[in-house]
Length: 533
Image (cartoon, rainbow, N blue to C red; front, side):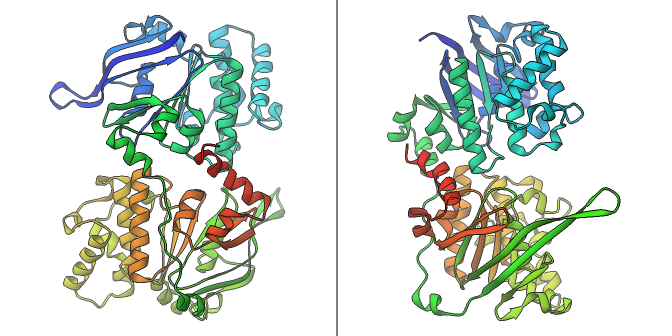
């Protein structure tokens, strides 16, 4: 098979000679014409830097050779590279909302590529762009041609980026985490589309990802990167069946496995800690000058949660998961229904009583970097609940309890005077968990607690949460669109679609034999791939 891309002994470093940071160290691999090759590894392993170095898109010092179609791109002029970028080698970036120009309409961004590289007239470029939008599955392509990026959904923005990348039928497509921010069903659709277009156009694909299920179903060969080095290179089936390197074995072992034991009979027979009946949440928005439309975010939701139990709530973005959770805690007004926590109806309580009760109900949010104040030290962040709910305790006791809470999540007292930006994503999530646990809550809402984390860090956080639940008997409402996380952590699962609960039941039974078509669709998008189907 003819080699299209050959990377030989690539080294990339940032900074001055005395303080240079080596991001890529002696990396070598090749991609044949029409081949699907994946680079996997955790954040900071050098995957994206390697991929962007192919097109010289990083401001860094590079050494080694990058041969593309017989030409060494390391020695190519900037003028020559501008002719290659977007035409012979195209790239799909990780976050389309930041990669697309917010000031230009989608159609203009696609026609720009065609006019620049192929020199065709605007009318012909417009016709091609509309055809590309239609080909990538965007509904009403003629209308969407005139839309701005913010007017499209996440999946539509990603499809528009694919259309732009494929406008000139490139020989090599670099896809950098193309599905990270997408729901599981949209993720499957995007990858199916990429595979179909790859076959149709006969192009090679360099996929950058940390999603091992995606790699297993898509790639022909895999390269595993750790700390800037390529530690293993193998055929996909061979690597998943018999990984050779210790780091690869650890990555594959990071896939979530069942982490909770069945509830004891006495816990199942005990009264519910949380119960909700027929909850309905609506939002209104203006239409014109005098009218308003009503959007129903949650419709007729009923559920129950035992002490020490985890109820996993799964569904796509916009299905109402987070809105329901906030309504259950009386953080979101409801137009119908009520939630009862430990025998007390939250929607009927006065503000003072509800505030006192909130010490027993805590939330761990999706993005710890956004939910932790950058102006507060770790001591102030973790101790914030104590200062609010227990203001009479002494400073010494408050600090002791803060240290105890940090130690329970695997951090020590030396971090007290540091700030959130000084920690990794996994450490920040541990800090957020410590903040929630310091008040010894009975109920914790976990809103996508691992969605922004690498596989190995995700496993560490899930094991931590499972261990804390076993020690303290807390109940969890776990919200996620990741079915593997839900299956690993939940005693029961509730599936939401369009604001409604379409199915709920015992976790193992629901996964083994789902009743509803939507649940089967969600499960097939994950488990068919992970089983090699």
